[in-house]
Image (tube, rainbow, N blue to C red):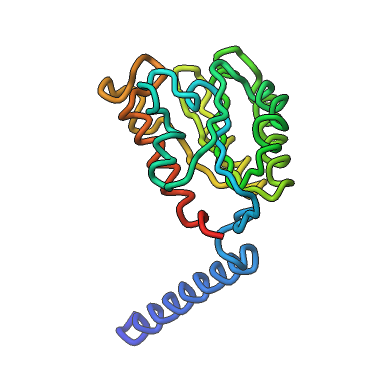
Amino acid sequence: MDMKDVFKKRIVVSVLAVVAVAFVAALYLLTFPSGEKVTEKTPPGENVICLGDSLTSGVGASPGMDYPTQLSWLISVTVINAGVPGDTTEGALKRLDRDVLSKSPRIVLVVLGLNDLAGGVPVEEIFSNLEKIVKRIQARGAMVVVGGIDVPRFGKGLRGSYKRLCEETGALLIPDIYEGIIGHEDLMSDELHPNDKGYQIMAERFYGVIRGYLQP
């Protein structure tokens, strides 16, 4: 093969590569024309509410150092702490009207699933409950942010399940709220609960996700 043929072959390959990239980009734009697929980008409610279990109520933290309180300092707005130690997705679903929907939710942060896993609740049931929680909140016009939990010691990596949930509902996702915290003695108060510094990281992590949606 002479040099002319080599150059021609390279040109053809380059053109095909450009066409392929353009096709993928066009397909993406047709599928997600507005960029990020997020439900309720401009929620009409008034309050930021944190729904969850002991990780939300602040077990292991000093008084006033739970993640919802630390988040309130970052956004300069009062954050409602609807965390109940030991709660499950089923329990949270039962109290959803009282603790969230009746309080004019604007943005709701959901951290649930750890107690379900510890109690042997099937993954399908966990995410069926979570889907109901997310959709009922969204039906009120509020934005939902899900804090995923990935604790390998339970033998069930749920990162993919949280991702699918948020892709299907349009909720925002933090893949693993424990990332960089669990297993670090300086950030944990016990085996499963962060200390003040650990909760600070959680608050900053949620802040990084919601700060662009705080203004009306």
